[in-house]
Length: 301
Image 1 (tube, one colour):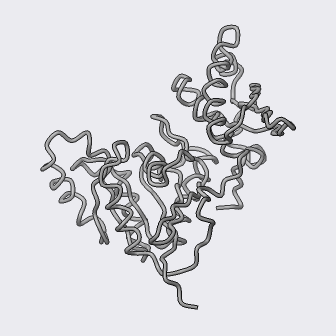
Image 2: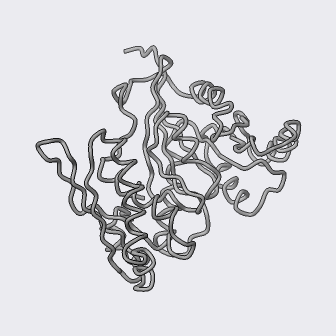
Image 3: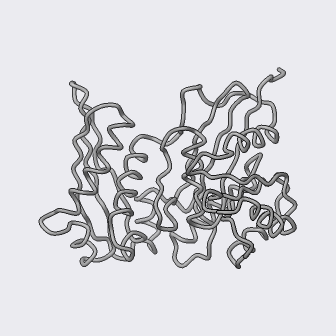
């Protein structure tokens, strides 16, 4: 059978906090991956789908590649590095700078080991006052890796994202449509709900807590009248963290719940009754059993 449309897999990689999830959300036109100004927001490989008349791109948004500090960190790095060998195109996101640090060089080493075409995406160009400077950033990066293409974009302002889509399709093979046209992600709704709750916690809590939290959905049921009941637990590593997450008279937990409920309702298009609890599980990020329970299975990497 001869296919007339292109289809394939593209992964977004880069150091933590370069805007991978923001870019993917804008490319597919819907919020699926959680975003936060705190690094290491994405823990699992999130698969989303973009379909148009040219064909279909399945995006894998991976955790940022960084030096691991615990078992969860090792899991995240393994997921990211494993993905490089499985896809048709790699998008490497970097910030607009001429300084190439150790983290970036570590990623370049990984990329030089694979045969997959790499598109360098210089993100956040809306922060550059003099647009001619972009040429100097391209010059700084162009010899670090044999790039197939270099595309400057602003994920936040959707600048040049259409050019980026064009370049991705250029490197995809002709093939079958893997998903229906209206599919935007393969993530189960429970997982998306858990991630949205975690995103709100990341945004609202102080810096020392977020890396040590996970969210589990205990129960998710739909009533006959269409209202969805969700019970979820925010898991943290210390009793002192539990107090901060709950807040005075439960104020912080209410804030997190209210912000998450609004976004979950927009996704499921029905009223949501969300109840949150907080549990303490000491050092869960170094426990393979807890990690598996919270959706990070080491065997998957």
